[in-house]
Image (cartoon, helix red, strand yellow):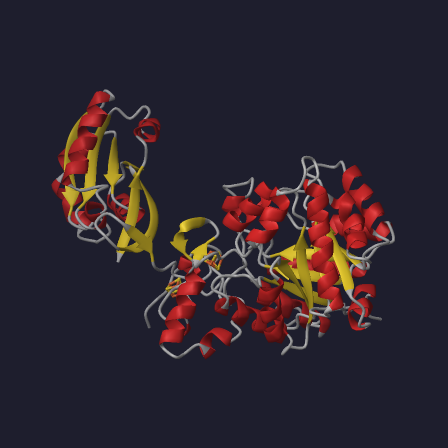
Length: 214
Length: 294
Ligand code: SF4
Ligand code: SF4
């Protein structure tokens, strides 16, 4: 799993840090490192940017996996630097931001926007593979997820917008339903596409979503 | 009793529908004018639903105006802007107000429209919306609850005969028929040989097909559509014919082409009727029909 993130603009980060003059910066050694949004280099660059904005940086670190509960240890280790800061700027996905907030009372500011959960295709290129819909249909769609790969999340076949196998919203993107059709044809399982798919259940786990392994 | 449009579909006559688009705003003068011009020359008038994802006066309101003018409306409903509760509620309201024909559509994508940051809904898709219509007719809603007062509709859908690739489109076509599409209005067709191939397939199913006729207004528009609009293919000879029109006569040539296509479809009984989309030139629909000899 990779949590795909994008750095907020410095302008927005500046606004979020308004009135917070000293900052501790924490990146993440896992997903945000792979997406080049919160690894060692990005944390170092952020330190310089914040200093240019006139902020005092009390310390920096890259947490091994910010979403993991081991994050508590890192927070403890840097207690002095964190304690003397007005806020922590977190350069991980929102799951890391949540973790950090659990372990410290200080204001926690996200430096990244969390976009989706995806896979890396080529170096630095990612695509969403699962929206965690709670009702996986991959078994009937040739392993291609229509909820995420189709712009409209259609489950009964293509819309009228598909053109030359591409999607109406972007000529450079494949139409999921052309891919699904071809994959099922290749697998000689095209009958699956003729099957009526009922409306999806959007309340499999009603928000706020929680589950308990029993 | 079946709707007037359904009666026309079942009468065996060559059915003609067209469409009007509500205003962005409350000035409905142009639409009312178009309805006046069209109501006596067509069997039914579609009212578009936030077409091209552009926010407008609602299709159900437009259908009310068509009704008030004494014409037969076809309510276009997309799944883009309403969840299953809102769609069912609007279907009940439409039926109560005497709007009995409904065209079930997926809807264009939000990013192509004029509210690019809006949430797209797509709680249902077009196939599921058709089934929803049939479910309401059975006296139940999608939650399995009983209805007090049971509606009935004439439900249809769309199909793109020139889609590339065509196979996935035909799968969806069959699913729509299976879930109760009584009629189809097709995306624009210009190449009759291609369309006949599609019809050979479609004739295997118990449903009516109205061929989509989009009026060409210039050679540029014909080229643009072929290049940019999914599922539209204007053959080169028609583009040449448009390009060869004398200055200021392109629209006239477009009317002739549309009339000729309709005339041939009717004469050879290729399909069950036509759906004319004049895109901003609704006032020439009677001329198109005259050119078709109707
Ligand atoms: S259908 Fe798609 S979004 Fe839903 S669980 Fe499967 S992969 Fe995830
Ligand atoms: S063109 Fe294909 S991928 Fe795009 S919205 Fe339509 S069905 Fe989905």
